[in-house]
Image (cartoon, rainbow, N blue to C red; front, side):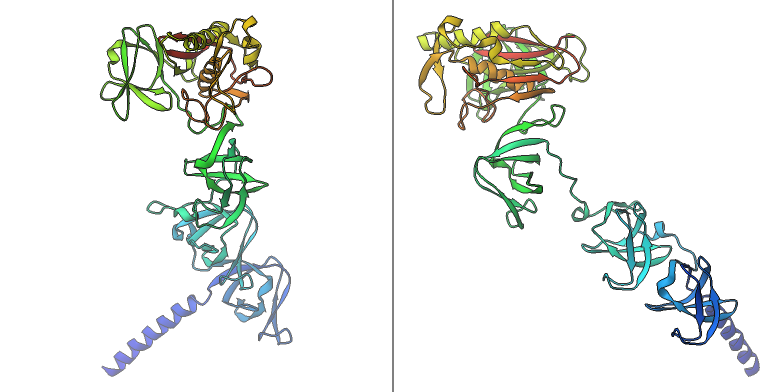
Length: 484
């Protein structure tokens, strides 16, 4: 019985030794040049054989300076620096092992440890897919052909989950390359931070009244670029946004209004926040309004706040068609501002007279595709001889002056806010002052006057547009239509 047990133990031991022998080859690889196989880890050790450049080898042990291989039953050593393309001898599935993938943006070395001087395990070519086992801020743990190691994290981009159940953590999603969508002016000195955080590292300063390129803003923080350096500044201290590309994103603060609403009977406008009655608007007035809401009301721009009309049954809605879907005759933009409908004083009479001068001169004007428009070409000079009366004017030094043409700026401001919703480029524009005007949101007024104070536009659309203006019952509305 003891002999049988001893025999079984011997068989088991042989099987274990056999498995160990079969698994002795841990890697396969190729060599970059002809080399001598040495008996020991020394260039002067006994020669056991040789390998030729490009030859496929079986590796028993891979170390910093020497690699132990087997060839034709002979086991010996070759220099590790001439060994490349290591692969796990037992087979591998890098994609299945990985949690994430990336793309090498340049040639990379896979190291045995998180050090540039650590042993080279593998290499990655530029543009090659990187299979990542663990993400790191400086080094990623990766696998290639079953060989695990580390690569520098910075040159590995386009990170993505390798399979379902994984998401790339937010801190490893790189910011998109900076693209200037707007320029804007700082109203105070602003610190540029490395991240949108007041405690983040300082990378520069944007000084008061300095213009800076802006990529995006959420109101609180804006990503900007100055002198080739990008960073974050307080977005609520940027003003006078102007977009570079008329087909680019809207200027921050611009809203698209989907309807021009005509009052079929007198309607009341209320403050959306307080419910206070703001004014009544007579039948026939046209207003820019938002979409119909659940309570059957519509919101609308009213001076610097949001108004609301509850009696929507008293409105006829004309739909605004997206500019890239518009056919001839379709409405593509609308905006409204409000003025005092009372005409009791000479100042009120003069102001409305001047507004009507702008309405008459610009109504049904056609702006051809790629054509330019200068407001002053149609409306200036603002003199008694050119049909204007005295009305209140606003300038940088006073709000309480009268001048010929006073009130005409409400026409240019309303037109400006309408074209901001479509690809019409603002070539020249300026505000009245840093305080703005009461009938439009802050920084969204457009001053015109004698000389070089002008609103100038270019139609970037592939078709002509027509301006339709109406001043009725205290409402000034500009509608823009596709003309051809």
